[in-house]
Image 1 (cartoon, rainbow, N blue to C red):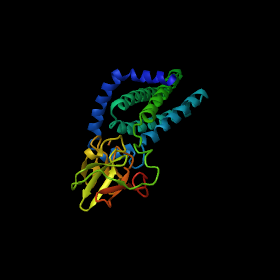
Image 2: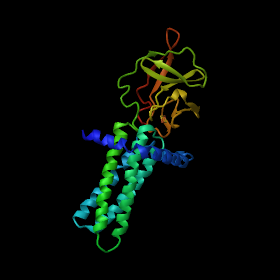
Image 3: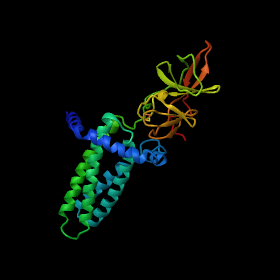
Length: 292
Ligand code: FES
């Protein structure tokens, strides 16, 4: 009941959040476009999941401390905590903007509502911090902190919608392949050299790339947001997703460029007794384990 009300409330923001999201995303793409290594770091490619998700708890915890210190009359401690909270908030925001750069459709609209709430909150917190530096009456800056906390709480709820309801930055293969792989016949008769080829192996859709005598096989669904890798391009021994440019190494399935923070499920391919090919999921020491 309450959740449906919140969903309707968020959807009603689409009238401003959709165009604003498109505008902000164009700016972010221009900023991050030439900064692949920075974006890799901010997305959390090195961490194995979104860096924003890991950082976002910090400001909420620290802002809670600000409230506690204010209620207890510990003005100096509240000011220090507020300063640290704003720093943590800014760090989480920068990482969040890296994820937002590659977010589309409804997730982007909801993420725009989330980031707007958080941006207004940090402005209010900065105003509170500045006002606290005056030795006069502290009522207004304290009230501002409470307002900021309300906005951050609302923003955190909306952020939860983006991740948990809409699955943004969630591994698209999280529930796949829990058991040992079985050999499955591939439904292709020709695999041209160096060209991505889409193929079915049982219920799974793969992308195959032949390099000489070796046929590399990865799952076709990009771990980032489900893009079709078979429509991608081969770059430096990797396949690049056509949707947001994530790269996965053909030999291992390891992530080589964000926005994905996950590896791609890998398959081995052999000639079948009937003369065609068959594929089997590689389940040990392979992509998806985050072991590199
Ligand atoms: S779906 Fe986003 S990079 Fe593949």
